[in-house]
Length: 393
Image 1 (cartoon, rainbow, N blue to C red):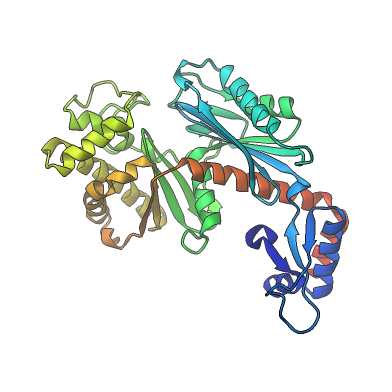
Image 2 (image 1 turned 180 degrees about the vertical axis):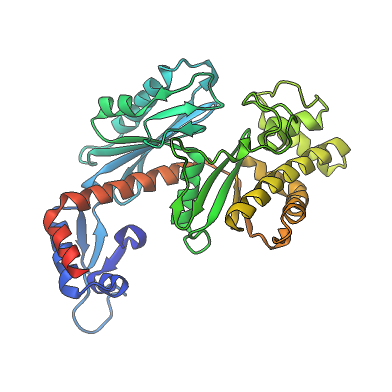
């Protein structure tokens, strides 16, 4: 309740949770004693009200710190937040992933987190958890980056190195999964129990929420939407296979098609935003090849979504990343592909939202994941609290 609403009274907690006033009082008193939460004097709805003022409760910012990090193709970013979720330190610096050896990934991450922590004032709290979002496939235990398009190396361990360096629990997660969790937490009515977050960037990724649970694979983060087959023996994908959705909808695929480089030409990994902006400008000016490139991207995305809808039923879709700037050029073919492939689904009826910047969402997903895991850890470690809650239920 406090994580969602920041400042609430015991009465409000009781009303919202259904727990008795005495149970809420017992739980909150213990958390106050442990300095996990703090009381704020004053009436909840302003100073002017009759009767005894209600004391609002809030999370104690100094109870703990969590560090969130994002490693991408050309940058590494770290944010440190207090227990109330407020950012207290952040660093964003260049990181040339393609030139880095496997040992440089955890080493650079450790250095960046250390530098961020060094900027904190005394008494800011202790670091208690680290969450890392990476582009690529991770194992379900959250220990390593199994494969990523940003490096030729595989099975790069992160968790052990981070835990050895800082002495706190750490986890490695797929960036698109973190995007989905951020949207679910930020707007639970709009992005409720069933939706997908599709990353449109240099590559194509997906975070999928079904029945209120984030979908992962048996052994890995899975949900590699960009590497579903769109056209067997089709265009060359940067994963090494041919015909993937990404080979038609990723930045390099759109650029390759717009410039008539040939579908079998090697995917470029250094396409600048200025170059993609040039393709969009050309499409606006009526260039047939640029228009066709975006249309093929939309068709590939729509085909993939239609196949997923046939498997689990339709769901809302959030398109995320700089590729959404071209949504006006891909929407038509995307929606047509959904309707053409799945006769039970109207392409025009699918709710689609766009978010042009993925990094804040990845970071937000990492932060809320770390904080909720810390909340659970505090709850498990508080035996009397556990007993009170169990008895109440």
